[in-house]
Image (cartoon, rainbow, N blue to C red; front, side, top):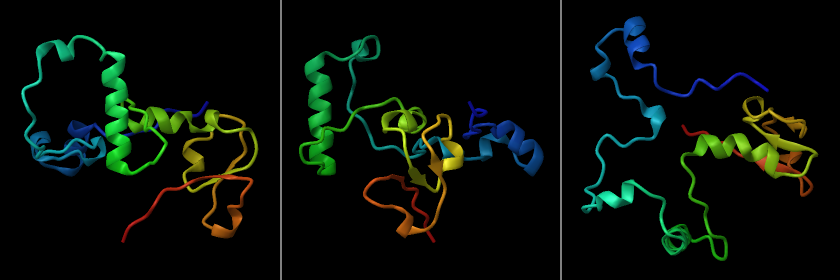
Length: 133
């Protein structure tokens, strides 16, 4: 298994190297919105137990409707990193193509990094990481 991915945090160390105070830094790697929308009052009991099954299913249907995924119900997860690390285990062993392959080579599923769109064919799974700019 590969070493853990350095994924955000470490603001105190970054400030020590690059300057400024930790409270002046904004860690964008967390996906936490520094200006979140106002939330309604949430009952304290919601933070002390897992949701009942009907609430879990209701949340999945709401996500499906919001994202337009048709018959596919999105799965609520505690963050994307855990799911990204599971991707190699969810596909049949074979050729998997993705630009992030070097970060998910935790199994013997034959990951190969490429930027060649032609390399992705019907008999392969593509892990796509968009780039912007």
